[in-house]
Image (cartoon, rainbow, N blue to C red; front, side, top):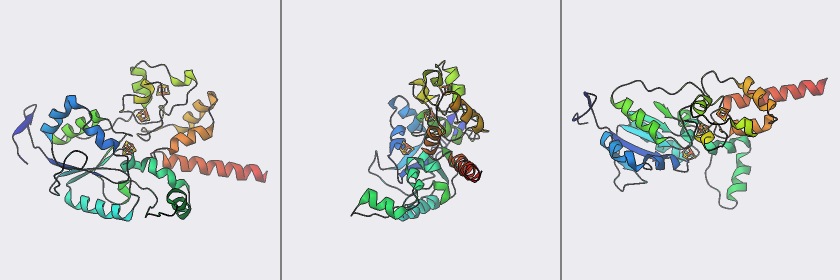
Length: 272
Ligand code: SF4
Ligand code: SF4
Ligand code: SF4
């Protein structure tokens, strides 16, 4: 690393970074190069040495690895382990990498052989239950979102370079939505998971009059009982809420608890 750069008088390195994908849509990687206005600044902070979407060169000599996507195949496990061996810092990039993302929706079907047959027919491939990176290797840092927000990645990279603690908002999306002076979507008859979802996206979806689907996972101390009550008060079913909570995998623990409660209520109801 060279020590030529400085930020607020603090000398900076320019770490070699690499970007990789597992099972994903590559939308998070695309975000990195999607905002030309800050691209030159970003590239002055880091030196990409491996980034299949935008460059031909490939090197395994990197310090920070950004890995997008869920683990769904055995060859991905091997690939991820090699990345882990090479990287000083391994970053899970986006909801697929952090929680399993949309790919983990297939985990709802217990019979994986049936899933393979339905999806791939006579062309079976090795596909397993979708898992976050942390199920296979140690992850140093998670960057949430489907997709990630470039601004957040830039902030985190600067924090890393100046040795600042990396923090994520603890408050929910509603805080940002209120600050943005949006009309609450519940008042327009739309469901929204903003009250229980971790902020940091600047209420991206409600700003465009779309309800939050919880892609960034739960806010600290997310009050799910209150969320159920808000949904019910606006005539939105528990099943609609569960559909949303299940979408990206960040609320998996809560969903399991709610499904178990439902089953217990059914059993108790049936036995009465
Ligand atoms: S988190 Fe969303 S945008 Fe990123 S790779 Fe997964 S599906 Fe694509
Ligand atoms: S639209 Fe959603 S995020 Fe915004 S205030 Fe209403 S519930 Fe909260
Ligand atoms: S509003 Fe919700 S679904 Fe939309 S980007 Fe933010 S956290 Fe994700």
